[in-house]
Length: 146
Image (cartoon, rainbow, N blue to C red; front, top):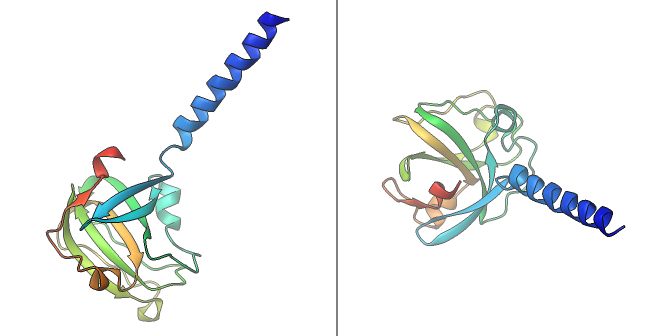
């Protein structure tokens, strides 16, 4: 009986750590100008395609971070978007471009591109960059832990 209990406990522990490993990267935190943002991570193709589409509210210190891997001039459109956003284009850990106050009224199918290749793209609530003085050249802290 003791052996069976030990095996069951061991199985529960293994399953717990496996699930933590699989789901550990669904959210993370990053910092820009000493402001902490809780970000949902978009790593898979389906997560990137959905993005913030269908989201009706984005809290002030929240966003979505697209982890692109290889650097490229990725195009982003507003398909399914319900809220206006700022797009922060990031190369390694440095902001290299910002697209501000993007509203779906400008066209759901208009495509936005960074000026140079990036490997991260951060979407935040519209006006965030202006309110917190986020600028090209600012460093994003915490990307190396994602």
